[in-house]
Image 1 (cartoon, rainbow, N blue to C red):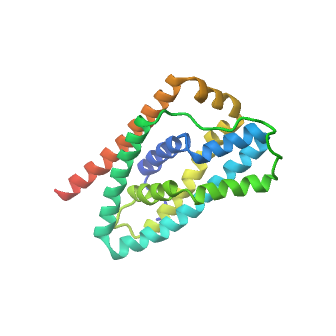
Image 2: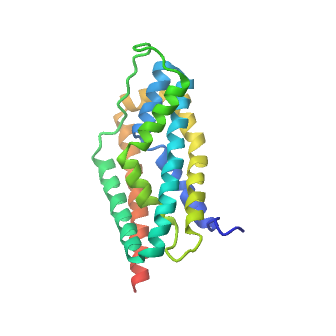
Length: 219
């Protein structure tokens, strides 16, 4: 197996994490659902494609930046991973605090329909300019590589590509079901609570795993 391919347990665990992150309500999803509801599914799909393209940029920046950090400052890399665990716990706390749901503009025809390319680039922009996404990738991706791994850069790029591949089916399915998804989040308080607590549990579990690994390594 090529050096840049992570071990199967890492691939599977990252696939689960990617799926959960993909279906987590956020700016990318809100934009794509709004585009689909306002201008049709094609615009929603274009917007979501743009957002996933932005993920490729984040992945490349993180992969090459983190690889330099691994080579030059192992202690700083350990601090970064610990910060990632703390950030995941913060996300869990935010999910519990949140009232849930998405803020969507559902008024179809309230503005002239843009071109599909315009919807695509809007998706790219909202992804690249969202500081929360930048912070998440900087702190999340390094959890799946070892600081002593000489193939860390390749593995980070592999995981970034895996994130996009895993995200495509659920992301596009959500956009295709835009009306139903928007109504579900708008009308069902219990649905929002279940979703938020589920996300909180997943984020907390990953944070605990990271902190436990650090503890074992230190002993």
